[in-house]
Image (cartoon, rainbow, N blue to C red; front, top):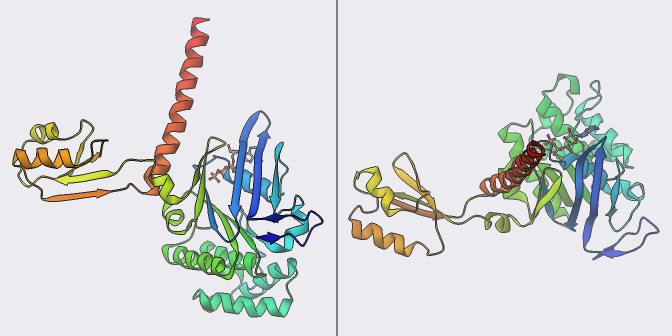
Length: 329
Ligand SMILES: Nc1ncnc2c1ncn2[C@@H]1O[C@H](COP(=O)(O)OP(=O)(O)OP(=O)(O)O)[C@@H](O)[C@H]1O
């Protein structure tokens, strides 16, 4: 539990971020529709969603950068984001640093904007850059850096004042795999220091490895909230079966569930309610044997695609119904 000491709005909370019913219109378009975000203190929390789902707009409303048309947001228990500004580090979707500054100065400058002493900012810049293996570019001007490198510098600048809440909008996009891994390490290290991290992404692999909890937003609404395992449990276990004999496809297909698909030398299908034992009995009796067999829970990628497709299918059905109603009117 922690209290918000920075505002008059004192309240104990287990959540660093508590946003309820956030709604935003851009003209007639409802970009965010009653989205809740509750981020537990000390957690790594992912906001996932396809392009245009409403992630950035939700994060901006959460931080008080734009006002919601409906809904409320509390940070550290406070309704006044400005009063807790120094406790927050934010990497916006739009990247940008002064091109004439060197990395060290750019980081110290961003820290100074959040109240960090200039000399301390320079010292911390050197420590962060060295820890991330980026020390060779610390005195390089931003304009001479690659986009990905400048993004790493901006990221360090946004957390150099050791904020309690770190909000990163699509932090992995534009980074090469080595820098992506550095960023994952940095996120874990900041969490271990005691910070809470909220980030948006559509790269499932990072979310799967990092997140304690996540929300999936699709078509302006929150469609899922829970842990990675809870998201994965939305889908049945998947079987990969490779027969030992080169039997005719039709013969093998007859042994397997109707939706089994052959890819390469193996068949892929979901386990139904009866479990895998009846299937193994059928395969054994058929004499086709087992050259390969694995049973695994689908990953977050599959769960994400499943949720988003369901939402899209619902929209397509509604649109078809409306079109039919109009045609018959
Ligand atoms: N200032 C704006 N004016 C008009 N429409 C906007 C504005 N900002 C966002 N939108 C629209 O609102 C919707 C949600 O945008 P948002 O940037 O929040 O999505 P996102 O999930 O972050 O997408 P992406 O992953 O592509 O960055 C989109 O359809 C977008 O075009």
